Length: 637
Image (cartoon, rainbow, N blue to C red; front, top):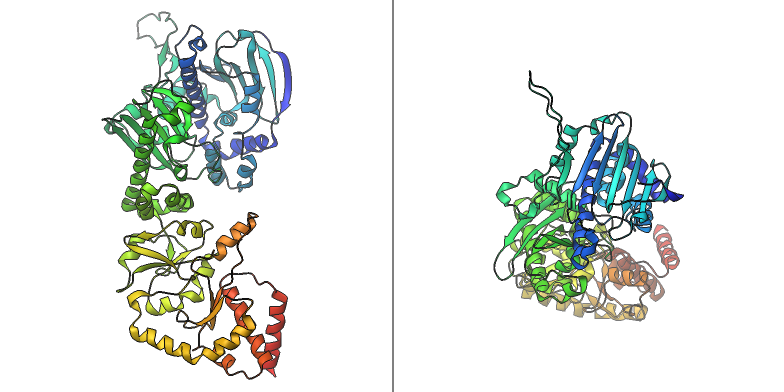
């Protein structure tokens, strides 16, 4: 290779500097993974060339052999990893080796805690494998040329990982990328053939591209002369695509290493499903559920999807047509014999077999999660904590699998009384009271607001379980649910409360009588609150509180109103229903109050308190405080 020309020095993004420092210090105990990451990148580059060459055979430049070569120099303390893949041009090098993963860097850095163990997990979620080279190297040199471009378009990138890098032009006769690591003092163990071979077999045995090293000279037997051996390359890994092998031949360790290869995650997968299907639609799938959420889980536009192969030929990364958006966290591989080899993104969307594969793979994932929930409650609880809010997008997005998704949902409830979401709808139904026909729930801005809501009082008295929902997606999700196992859902803060046959005819008759007795009080309250409420009625849902606010059957809940308003959306003006508990001493005192002005002040205080208990913000907090202070002063005289 000729010397660098058009050489320029550029600075890393600030985020890269911080990341390099973090990687070198946080991952020190895990330093051998650098080789896995570099081999993984080389494998991806080789498979991308194979795919592009389907349309343009000239990219092979007369040499269709794809392999990854590892060399080392003990004396110089250097290791090199070379591939004959797609390679990079000057712009690719600056974009990919000077910045991090295109997007989300600020989000990534804002999550750093200073705790090395936690931060190294974050790195895994971020997928920044190339930079792991700096854990063991004091300098990294990259020599690369994009396939199909002339030899003089080669690029040399070099950096000591401290804040800047240089990029120059070189003459590179062969396509692909060669990465040379100048090892730090104390890291000489990696310039050793036996050590490198053991790491390749440990971490990269499963990749389908052969990883080759020079055969090492065998020492001569005693009494024999040492003969000169010709340098010869040999494959170190099995180079058989792991998903094509039989499940019985594979160990958990092999599955986990393959997961790390395709996901660039540093942590193990939580569970996986490996299946080969034969018949009209032939395909092999290997699907993984990660243990940790990726940093861009909530970016619905972020790259996602499975690695797609057709008859073992790599077609594309992040093929997102095979799983719905609510399963965007799933990693894995799908290899089909039924998709035409000239598959491109456009053709893929029109191929009817894609819809069949999508349906089959979606069911496969849901079955895998159902199995996890049934067989390992602790693991499923961990999964739900990490990915539960994403699964909640499912009922609206995937009507065909709604029943399966409903069985995967978990809720907090009054049964346990704590914030842990561990109650399934099946659990709830088995605990329903005799005569209970509905599944009751309440949505609030926080768990404590839900747990302490006055609306729960009658349910506690009758020992009827209520689901407590407090995540931002919950009210929207419940709006998409109609029934489960023949039982409809009811928000206990909306409309008339129907307790089914758990309420006797005697209870209903008594409520009618009490309502008739207090018609005068309701009329007086209407005069004070007419512009604030839709109506006023006697309640049967309260046992301890004087009053509560109820939303109309079809009105938007408080949580959804806040979300819409925060997004700048106009929401319809609605008024709540004010329900009063005639058995409460404060309501009795209000009924007997002869002074209309004092009556009005007390009525407004009770109305505002009912709003506060529901988690609402007061329209005029100063007036509320003034009225309350006035009443307190009168009481203290």
